[in-house]
Image (cartoon, rainbow, N blue to C red; front, side):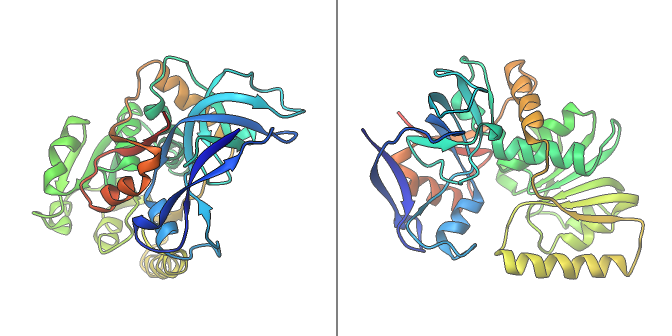
Length: 321
């Protein structure tokens, strides 16, 4: 039996995404074969498509997070059953596919009634936000947080989970997205019409979450309270440049004060426990992931064009019919 997946045929614009057919095999020992229902589209996918990030050589596939149904189980894997609905992360980063092979420790069971597109938001967007909030920043109810870039998939997850944790949430966004930030329960900051430095000059924050890591670092960092935390996540720039900027900013900040911490987030253990927590939130209605658009898998190039247009609020999800 053949299945289809989307690959990066060469580095470049969204048109380099091509559909290929491959022969489906039985899962190896310890693997689970999942029939993908929905796969998330991330900014990092666009970056990996357009340039040589990690020494990958085309063709290769994309996609961090997914939701689907267990189709077959390799020898030695007893965590899941055939037919069970699951969501999570694929460590092989190849979720743009009708079928994927996943290690069971990277996914959790979700209710059959869950919206696959919303469930596909858990493995990357909501996991990043949850771990940054509770495992990196160790937030407490009543604290004040700022999210730089609050209208995207991770940003909206930060708002939802921040409000759920009892925080006062501020978020930056473009003018056209300010109403969304307000509707989600955060205090919006219009970076196109306001000077961030002036807007927050009298507002001390306990924690800042920064997925942009650009010109707003300096004003945001210096509005942290003593012992506040500045958490950088994601890859808004290429890894080599990102590392240089991070270390430069960290060095500069530490020359001024030792009471404010700047931390670079990477996925943390125990992610399965955190994914299970998020699955419970989704099942009980405590979170309502914002899906901007649902686009067929075979139109992945259109999804990338839309994401790169800057018009997206929430997350774009590829749907496998």
